[in-house]
Length: 407
Image (tube, rainbow, N blue to C red; front, side, top):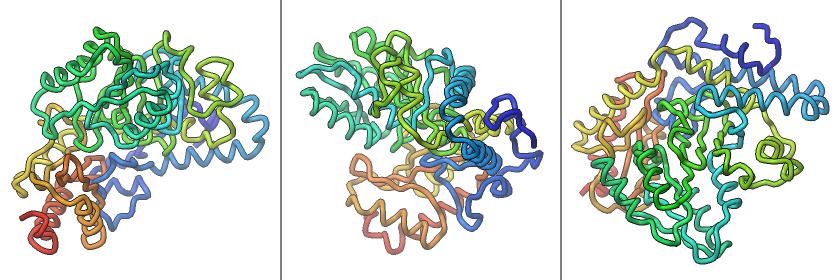
């Protein structure tokens, strides 16, 4: 395969499943995932296709031929070109998009930059990602502000209830809302546009944490009307890990900086993010390659969403359980409430390890809202029998060594 340059988006469109037209376990051949394990956790860390890894190897080899020329002359234009590819896919202009290591890095940059004063308030929900909530509390402490956490029900019943609960929390000191697009613990797709509208009406700035969204659901970031939108291309869009994205509304760019300040700090929004020091930029330059692989599988998002819904239904019926959100509020993940009564916090880790060690099933089990949850993902390498196998293992564990957790 010949490339005009090792990151050219136009060339990356040739990357695909190479005509294999496979799905289910047969599609594992397109990845380096261990075939002796059942992988139901695409949502946490993604999986990099072999052809995208090969693209990354080419980029790294190109950099090593002449690092000085690459970083000094090629990289600025290469990053801006790749940002154009991001904008073409997720909306806005290329100049509005920058790269970062992950959504958490973007969130920290915004929290550090945001002009919040002593006594002011930042708002989020009880479904916020744990690392983000910790960062909010730390930055609030440093600035003399405080964080209000809106308690949302663990089981989502309607968009209306979520919107009203969040809007009711806004007060005269509310300055910033950090809201998930797709929650991590409960895999719930929140009504972001409606939430942003209510925040705007209250004079509250909004940062949308869309870590799980790119490649899992259709996305037009500027259409939400938020001030910032961040997501990861290394989860559902098949980019290498370390390919985080940040869209910033034009009117916010002058005051938005990365958490790491370097030579680009005084040169504006794009320069500040494009250069925070020497690092491996190959994940960013593989954005187009990951997106091309995603697009080479027709109807992938719909396929994954339907498979996740069917798999969740099998698990819920077999376990007598319930999902955290109805199908219309889910994407390619589903969180299943294993026990609707308090459990010890260590039970989740023990249950997850038992599934991995004794059944070779890789799936997250979490302790959220004092309950025990199983979150399954659906990706091209999964099939419906994977969820039946997971159900069988859960039933055995629940009736065996973990019986005490389910009494």
